[in-house]
Every structure is written in C-alpha cells, then in structure tokens.
Length: 361
Image (cartoon, rainbow, N blue to C red; front, side, top):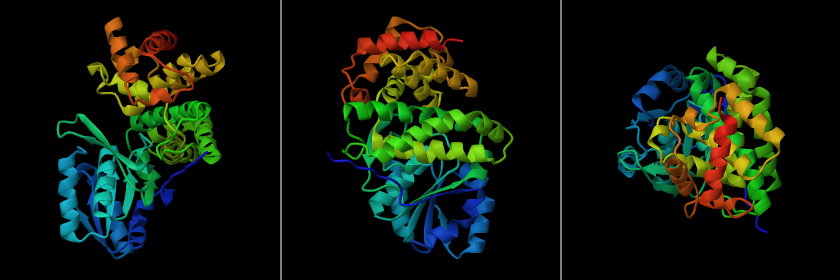
C-alpha cells in the first residue's frame, strides 16, 4: 500500500512574528512580491515596516483585486517577472493566499504564506481554487509542492473578527470525521496515496483540541488578546486541519458544503460554517453513536456554528431544495464517494432532513 503525507516545508507561529518577515525572505533572496489587498496590507503595515528595519529586503506591493482568477494570477505573474522577484508572499485570506501560491508555481519561485485570519485550513495546502472574474467556481489548480513557509502571526489573527476564527473551527471540525471515514474505505488522499498513521493522529488531535480550547479561544479573540488556548485553536484551524485533510482525505462533510452552495441563501455564509453542518449530516449518514452526534451539535451551538438549515439562511425547507443539495453533494468526483459505503442522493436527502431536525434550536 502506498502511503503519502505532504506538508509545508516550514510552519512558524507566534505573536508579532510578522515583524521577522525579512529573516525568512532572506532565506530565498532579497526581492519579495507581496500579494495582498490594500486593506489587508494596511492592517499590518506597521509590522511590515518593522520587518524592513530589522532585515534588508525589498518588498514590492503587487496588490490583489479580491478574486483568485486566471486574469489576476497572470497579471501578478507578469509583475513578478518584471520585478525579478526572488520570492512571492501571499498575505490575507484564502483567495489572496491561493493567488500567491499559483503565481509562485507558475514562476517557479518559493512562496511565503501569511494568513491574517484563521478561517480555513487552506494556507498549508498545495492547491488553489480558481474562480471566474465574477466569483464563480472554475477549477482546482494543483501544485508540485506545498508552501515553502507558512508564517502565522497570532496577534494579527487575534484582532480579526471572531466570526472568522469560529468558521475555521467548523472547517477543522470535519478533519477527523472525514479522515477516519477515508481510513475505513482506504480512500486516496490529495496526493493519490493512502493516509499515514501520522496524518490520522494529527486529524484526531485537531478534533480533541477543538473540544478542549474553542470556547476559551473565542473569548480571547473577542478581547483581541493572545492566550495559549487561542494559540492552540489557530494551530488546529490552520496546521492540524491542513495536514489532516490533505494527507488523510475528505469525505461527506465537504461534499455537503459543495451541495449547499447550490442554494442562494447560503452564499453569504463562510466555508467553515457550511462544512460544520456538513459534519452533522455525515454523522447522521454513517449512523454515528448518539453521544458523539449530540456532542458535536452542542459544540457547534456553543461556539456559534450552524446546526440546521435555518442557521444557514434556508428559512423555507422544501423537498426541491434539499434534493438539489443532495444531488450536488453526490455529483461525480465528489469526495462523498470516499465514504466506506455507497452513497446516493436519496440517502443524503434523508440525512439532511434528520440533521436539520436534530440541530434545530
């Protein structure tokens, strides 16, 4: 059996660590292209200025138009080539980070990823989600390798809106639930191999950390302070979940998310918020023990994650809407087919209805 585990070359996390950016840039060269929106860059400009005082390097601002599209990737690729950039830096949320990874891949340059929120596990991954310029999903773009460095400044994340952190908890919640399903079915991970014991253990640690530290971390983020609990949850949301999902595999939780995007009412909810409800649906689908199912629902309610369709803006639940989600969730190529048993749209439809009733307030 072929087992494969992939990860960033280096992960650094700490309070005010962004002010040491120059030290990390110098490992690759002296000219860096920064891919970040004007607002995201502005929020951390003082730290970037401090970094340039501490170490000699050039930081060229390439900007970011808020959409990870081929047009934006190609524009920034041209900027990197024109400026002779030695390293690409992506700073901000998922789309700017994905754009930076794509530009680095196409220019064959190293990439430093600097998330300013902990809302998903995307920073560590070797892929980007490409959208049209109108914001519609277009394709997945896979890379040869994961980022050279993921640099996480916990003080920056502590100052971000708490909803981002909670959404990251929802994304991370699915990691162990999906990893164990993939292990049972011997499903392949993103690298076309089976999971290692290390990846499975990381996924389980992610799950345990959420139940132990989420409420404490949420309180710290609401107060805009860094505590050990917040450090742990940031690591769970970004690193543990990132390694766990990419090296262990995805199953029903993320497919349910994809199906939910078929409903316009859900469009203003974050990825992790939809994945959290997907986790409840997967537990129903596999007939998880009652204690685990109710514990998961109570956890989501305690931190403010959706547990029913109404929480995702679907106020009128109709058979047509639920079946639309179910059909989208079970489309060819969806990761729900990594479950250890065949899954049909009718099965998903029933699981959604049951999860919705169980999770209703």
